[in-house]
Length: 493
Image 1 (cartoon, rainbow, N blue to C red):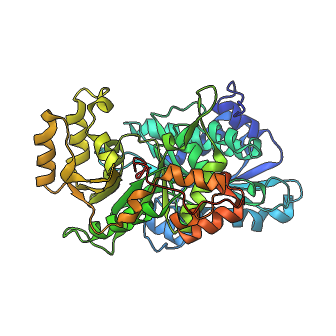
Image 2: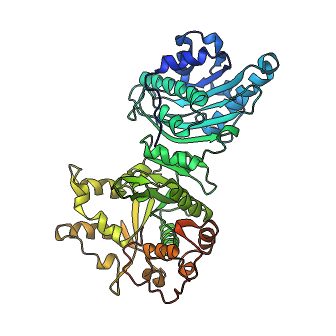
Image 3: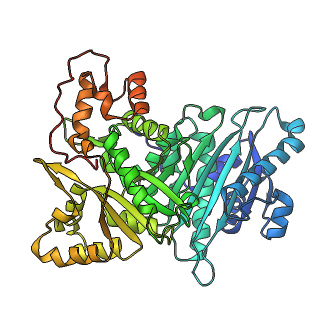
């Protein structure tokens, strides 16, 4: 259960509480829409007790002179934010540590924001972070986040960033020992239709027990963002930083665990995608996607919960195979494509099993859309996207695009998509994989049946055994004659 914070304390009260704390002292460096953060501390009163300096290197030449020239040459970026934090915190220690270091916990707050321009044509977003001590002369911690501003007015965006900045500094000092409460408090006096936080990272001696992958999960779980990304190294990444101007191939699944059929789907699907004439094979990012729904298991009282350990087990395995992981709240494929299409204008590939093709053509899933299935298809297929379908074995018959029979009134629509190269069968797949179902492999693992290892990648088998994942116990059982010929409905899961 997530503990609740004191919702009675507002922005001004938070700023004043910090101002009145004799130990907290630091500087503010803000670029763009973040000017309201320091302003909130001035307006609260007693700011002299908190603020050593405020500044804004708004001009790019001044910014480069103060913080250095970053390789990306982008001023609203994480490297720029980190340079700001390092510079401002370093100056605090250099100039004030001897004078008041024994009684002060220093902090440096920085942000670099791109608010809505005059013509309202830009993507409003930015980076924000705090470097801070929790005890005098102690080591510093960092909290860094990326935010998307959704207000359709420049002044409202600035006001929202001002509130978020106060919430962040307050959380660093008062909620640092409770990461979930820390996260929830960031949206105090804000709403999710004003801001989205799609990346957050905790680092430092006081956050050694914080798993940033879980923080990514919580961002999506609490509705702070529709999606979050982390790389093969397990580090949180900002989605646009990873996917901007890239071709993207995505495969969705439960991956509990990832088995050979998943890798065959991914490898053959990616190979076909890269062979497309309008795809630059040197500019492709491959994503494995876990949806919130795929992470939920039904317990005895029929309430949906996410098993965080189970989530981390799946992620560890995916990362060990070099995968970049996307956590999303997109149950429908058209929502996933819509999200990715806002990040890149290049071609997208979606690799999925035959059962998911049937799901996409089931009109019952689009009852909440005024335009029904046509509205969803307008989003899914109007962009540069192509579906690659991995076959399924049912009752000895291999089902693929050629055998798919949509409802009679959708046949012409399906033929149109095939004719226009929007849907394609995956070729050169390993037919032996079609006999294997994920849920059956999971059952074998739980029972410790001998021979289950042949159905998963070598690295995965080793990790499952070493950590005893997914209920595995090293029980020796006769299982060589275990038959895995059930229908392959779970191929894409």
